[in-house]
Image 1 (tube, rainbow, N blue to C red):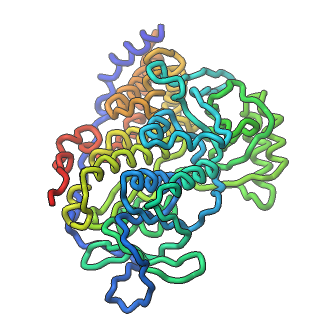
Image 2: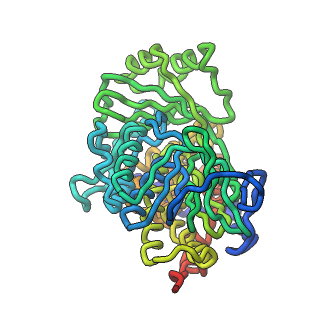
Image 3: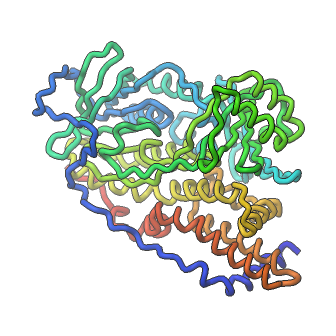
Length: 525
């Protein structure tokens, strides 16, 4: 009967074509690889501006700004390849964050490729084999399709700070990697080319560090990104985080996603005794105050009744304990200015809603790609030629990054509650489609986990959900009201996914081989 719904939906789609006409026109990129770098209000000092600073003695091939997940992994990778790397990180103490705690299996495969898989050892990391999805008292278990991989391959969840410290320690074992605590105040520009950075060390002394390539990985709060890209940051929601102690999830070693009202609630283990809970609060709703007790009351009265019964007592105990934190969730498509001497990576460059936990997978995939691009280069000093060559990075990363980005944004919008009948049907259809099992669950979970990041597969599954929902509406009695809701469901699905695809870039996402930068060859010296 489920597949009759799909067939009925396919027939019904012909009634809804008028709703799915959408423009894919892309804005032409301004400038070229040789364009002058725009400061956009951020100070960038040159050797001629009269600023007095001490210059770091010694030769450096690459400066990395930031030593988070992206920066630390990149430092180890490039240092292992023989590059002389200088990493400048604002704070080298262990970070304490409520996100960046779930590494998808696709990200773990990249760790293996980089030789960093032991960084999830000795930090009490927990193996994750899939998700449990909850809606209206029903639940379904969705397992990662790991049959073709070694037994060690799975997701990993952990304390973000412990993972980062392990990677920093590993990077520090490379003799040609210098890890320094300091605050980068500006990029050093000469004639449109980035030559390095100005920074203050831990003691407040001002220094200038120079290198033929500067890679900015200073995270979601980056102060330098405006010089290197066109940031269009959106804040679709906030996460409210707390930790449940000494309790068990209903489905062991699985992330739990509750399709709550107004938006999803997440649970996943971060150690053998702790479960992270993240409560999503949409931007359109006022974030309750942490200081006056509003937040605790909101969690107890609105969220707790939607939590699985097995977790409710521990959830309320965690609220009573009071260690509640919140953070904005940011989304930003990659829109770089190709800049001689500089490159953006990590959350400074590209962000997506953290609902699907795909951020670290994208960052690690980018690092593998950049390592492979830089490997044949002995000399990085021809900034113009290097910039032209590294434009291929922005194109080659797109199929993987845009699949994970698009899925995160689309799923978040589908999973949020809405009074609109078409949105309600889409949400129900998504839950039931995933519950069918087989290709209907394996395909989307392979996309989400980074095991099969293919843009076309994503679009096909997304509209298969919509068609499935329309089929259920029209079989066995396609009344005018149901036909209208079905047409609006298809229209709504198009309105969710097409703007995200447009922001990612249709040509780069689906037809990267048609982009000239795809074929850039290493500069010959």
